Amino acid sequence: MKNKYELVVVGGGFAGTAAAISAAKQGVDVLLIEKYNCLGGAAANALVMPFMPYWTNVPDTKERKYLCGNLFLEIVEEMNKISGVGKSMSTFDEEILKIVLNRMVVKYGVKLLFNSSVIEAKKDNGKITSVLVYGKSGTMGFFADTFIDATGDAELCALAGCEYSLGREIDNLCQPMTLCFRLGNVNKEKCWKNHGMINSLYNEFKEKGLIKNPRENVLMFDNVNEGIIHINSTRIVRRNPTDPFDVTQAELEAREQVFELNKFLTENIPGFENARVISTGMHIGIRESRKVVGEYVLTEEDLLSLARFDDAIATANYSIDIHNPEGTGTRWHEFNPGEWYEIPYRCLIPKGMRNLLVAGRCISSTHEAQSSYRIMPFCCELGQAAGTAVVVAKENKTDVRDADVKKIQNKLRSEGFAL
Ligand SMILES: Cc1cc2nc3c(=O)[nH]c(=O)nc-3n(C[C@H](O)[C@H](O)[C@H](O)COP(=O)(O)OP(=O)(O)OC[C@H]3O[C@@H](n4cnc5c(N)ncnc54)[C@H](O)[C@@H]3O)c2cc1C
Image (tube, rainbow, N blue to C red; front, top):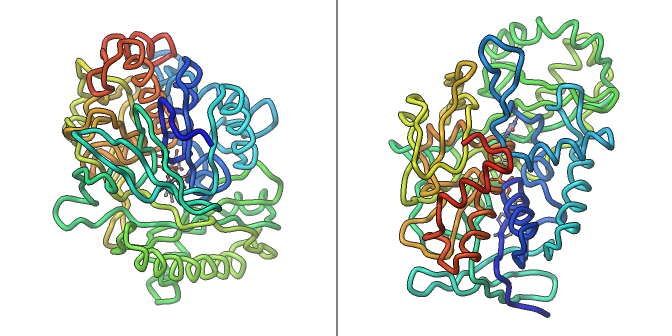
């Protein structure tokens, strides 16, 4: 078994898969390690859908300016070829996503290791030297010149003893966890016609104590498949997503909420009369957990001032979207057409580390800033940026923390980044 690679990426969500593909495509020898049996991360394992918007409408025109980089667009295009995305290019079929990502990593020569978790990291002088992985044959060690933490939970960084923050600054509470689910046997035409009555009735039921879920509304999306509706409306608050007993409790409570919502919809909303729960996420969806403390911490002020940075490596504009970590309500700030902010390379570098980058929802930021760039298209973009930084470091024979940022930016611009 080969145990030394130029790059080890931990986590096969959008961020990790994009990092692995972009590095491998440009000649880096990559191992991608994923805990489960497929790529796609939250989309695959927690049934998260749809893609939130990854463009800005150019004012006074009908044009869209994409902010996500070409790799995400390529993934959507590949899914579209096999009917994996809806007309809006936002709803999608996660089974098509999984096969598309498998084919892409194989095509670009990424070595894949599924059903295996990184459980330990050895660190020396600001560098990770190796990681220990637990899989079917017990434990295995892997060495690499560079590592990328794309675990969503900054798990590799935590194992390596890097500094991190959890949730919001005042009390460490994270955004709520949500178990997404699908209802089958739905008469979609009828249910969308009656959509307007759902939330007022739902809140009446809540006031009468007939619904315990703290969420303020029922958020549902169409699914690309006939008769199926996607529901993202369970809400588990005040639980720590990095504490396994808290997560277990969250899974129990959320499953009760799934059936509470199912009962409410089938008994009260035309179109849902014959609906049945046909699937739930393999694990509860985690919006926010650890965020690494990096060489720069992105803040809400940066987002609101549409910050520009000399070392920008990504752009984003999804709303500041904070589901109340304590109960009911959602805080929301939407960016205007033509507005976006930049994310600096320093947010991908854990403080003091020389050969480790972080990508995806756990980069260095505050609770408020994370609520915006955390969506799948921008996690993919952050992964692509991290993979490209590894290519530049390899070309110039430097540690990844010292990678030539101008060179990274030029490569990313040629890959459609709006820098
Ligand atoms: C309920 C919910 C609703 C959301 N709604 C939307 C939405 O509508 N649209 C949108 O665009 N975004 C949405 N998001 C946000 C988005 O899904 C995530 O922020 C994004 O997918 C994160 O991508 P990632 O690659 O950073 O991490 P993840 O997708 O979490 O991927 C991390 C991967 O790392 C693996 N991993 C973790 N630890 C280890 C380890 N130790 N060893 C090996 N592998 C490991 C995991 O199995 C996982 O596959 C939502 C999120 C949630 C939870």
